[in-house]
Image (tube, rainbow, N blue to C red; front, side, top):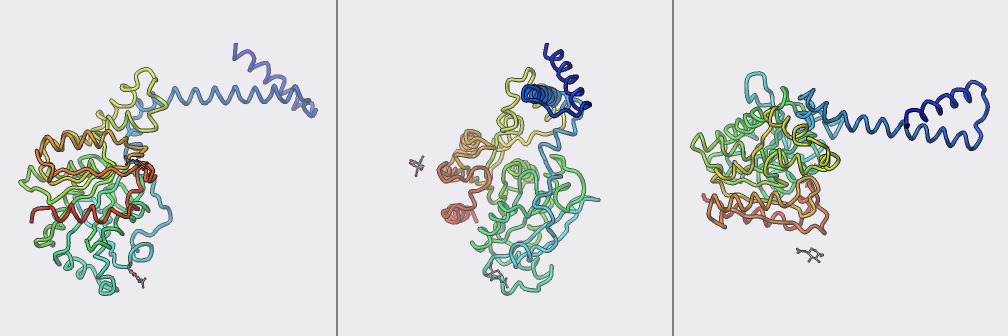
Length: 357
Ligand SMILES: *[C@@H]1O[C@H](CO)[C@@H](O)[C@H](O)[C@H]1NC(C)=O
Ligand SMILES: *[C@@H]1O[C@H](CO)[C@@H](O)[C@H](O)[C@H]1NC(C)=O
């Protein structure tokens, strides 16, 4: 039925064009209808074909999860952090594995900014042993270490007197290689050992955001297998695991009622070795944990973080070692904005002071 009308209208339209007659009112409105119908048909076709594309081209799901090719902010020279961000920051490249070069920023505590001017890599490396806490910042998917919300967190930590090391995992930013879950863990693990080799007795803490929370807990569990308990782990905007996050992501709303949603969208993640199992990891992890979450987080609903809190509390059996701070939804922080909270430095300081020395 729809097809037949479509064909008829298209003929009418062709006649109109040939004759060069300006369309009369009724004709142009039927022409508009023709375009609307075509448009709707195209949208329907795209809607239906997306799930099949997911199964046919498994690489797509990796690109959706990592979004590493989205190198926002664009046109930024990651090798010159002092120009675009803090003037007490150095850029360096570390080799986490043969053939994998990682772009990393090291920001020293803000109080050292004058001293840091014009200093080389050697000076920065030596400064890691100055006793100030060190945060390894593990960012979420998409974009680079220069994204404004990431720089926002680094600013807060540096002003508090902490060192911050922020890397772009393999395949992100100016780092080489392609992302895989094992690869991201390898990169974070490498950076941790690199820092520990230079940090003396300083506390070393992981801060993971969004997808980076999966990297943080994967790495903390991997370290436990090596007999190492990380001094502290902070997870911001954390999900239970990537499968459940996939089902809760705003993108999934369009497909929740699509027949075979799990088969088309969630199974390909596992088939592509995408798990990021924060829930399983927290059953094993023994590092003190701080969970930060905005009530109005639109990417990761807060009930996931609350679930993680319960899991970690059961596993560690201590309210001193597992903390959760929820930010009131009326503050409007959503998924990325809680670095703006004026109470954040106090919250972090209290957590860091509570860590065992
Ligand atoms: C360097 O950074 C510090 C701290 O952020 C700031 O107070 C200072 O004005 C900056 N100096 C220059 C020359 O940009
Ligand atoms: C959040 O903030 C609003 C407005 O300030 C307030 O009415 C509400 O009680 C707060 N909610 C919680 C859970 O604290």
